[in-house]
Every structure is written in structure tokens, then in C-alpha cells.
Image (tube, rainbow, N blue to C red; front, side, top):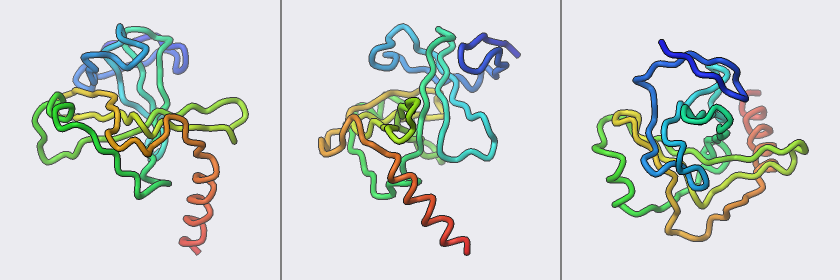
Length: 156
């Protein structure tokens, strides 16, 4: 299996079959079109990474916002969905880019432009929501804290 040197994860080994291609890149990074969707921990279910295979310095932290905002309902143009190829039994994966600064309470997530991936075709795209009520910079830390407390109460 091939290896790739990255700034954030060191040397990684990857399966070429797992590459997700963003034909237009991600806004601001048009020359990075090949990415790995990965997590640091197999048990992780909220935060993931999109590591560029075209530039080892480029990686995005992704978040499954449905874990804390279950009513999140981004609307995107059908033509954009069609660009990801035919759908099969596996649903599209929808994640959002999150920025985690040194002061974690200022963590913010881009709800306006979700990252949508079709793992069957290996295609992905960051899409702009047509419902404009979602902000580009949503402060998510307090929602995470609420979700954590709710989960702890449910386990009791």
C-alpha cells in the first residue's frame, strides 16, 4: 500500500480504493482534489478528517453535526447531488468543516456548505445550501456541551 507524508498525521499508509475525489477541489484549495476520509480513533463518531493527497499540509477537520443538531437539514441543488454519481444502498455522507482554535470554546462549524461524499463512486463535493438560514460560522461548543450532558443523563 502507498504511503504519504502529512503535516498533521505524519506518514500514513492508505488504500488507493478509499480515495475521495473532489473534482473541483474544496473552495480555496482547487489544486487539492484527492482526499482520504479518516479518523484517528476507530470508535470516533463525531470528528473526522479529510486529508489531501495532493498536499500533505492540507487537511480539514470534519464534524457529524447531526450528533448535536439533529434537525440540521441542508438543501442543495439536485444537479450537485447528481455530480457525485449514482446512489446505491449506501447513503451519501454529509459532514461539515469545523475550525477548532486554541481556545476551544470558539469552535465553529460551517453549516452553510456541507461536505457531501458518495463512498460508492469515490466522489465528493462541498456544496452550498439553498436554504440560507444556516451560517458559515456557527459557534458549536455550547451545543456540544448540551449534547454531552444529554447523553450522560440518558446513560444513567
